[in-house]
View 1 (cartoon, rainbow, N blue to C red):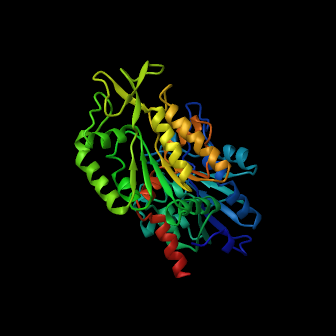
View 2: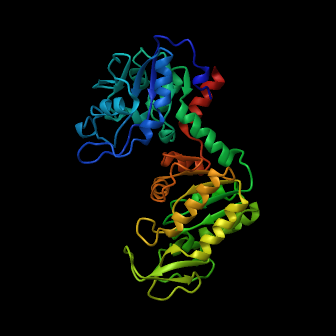
View 3: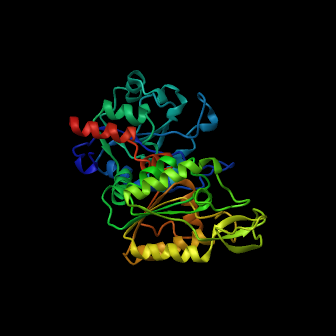
Length: 392
């Protein structure tokens, strides 16, 4: 795909820039996490420095029609604060862009956005756009006009943030330094079946934690008592075991865990064997022996891809497994001994809780797009950009 390195002689030209400004906003209208805004700053400033005019397209929430609740009209002041430049606002994404840099109103105010019709794409481009730049990997799994349609309608490039993301993902699963491990946690395997089935063919070892590990342990005959466990997924878990064996991928499951009588912060717990969970207990985190075993695996690895916590990281003391492993991995990254590529909403929150979200090799802010990439799916935005590259 073409990058901004390939984009020259654009003085005075209008760049239609797709960003993902769907950021968390509190009841007072304040943005509580500016990570996505901060990461695209380099792209915006580079285009500005090259003399381009910029019309920014994005969305907020899931509006049904032109709902003022989801207007982006508050965003220019936030962008000015984070980027240090003035950004004008255009109250309809189909209107003509104004000024040197402007933010267009929520593209999802038009239901045609999701249909990705040539007619709506033409209206979006407005006959004024010269170049399309996509710097929104987090929506790369959407087949929408402002993502895919514009890539077909105009000469298309990727921005610096998307470039960094794709390079990081390639280093994790495309052509990684081996041995490579995947840490996958979370509550259910039913939501990550495609992820697991893809990973066992890509990595050398799959480390499982959280509720999904319980399901695999149950499939092997363990009684998890009151622990979160998808018993109806037993056959699916066994099939993944079989597929992993055929692919030469080892699966590591926790040997011990912290078991409490209820899910609450500060609850008393006992560390128990995962094959001997007491009748009245539920496992809420991995135990010290499992933590040590995982850290020992990390000592042998060169690359780790991480999605999902090891336990109920939201409450103490059941955050310990996730925190200790995250901090151990971060230390190895700092020493240059390990690459860690992480992503997914809970994962980012867990790493932030551990205080290491900025210490990993790369942490993706993409949700659905990151998971679909882990599933090995082709992402519509990337396909469109690759096609444009071949055509040009």
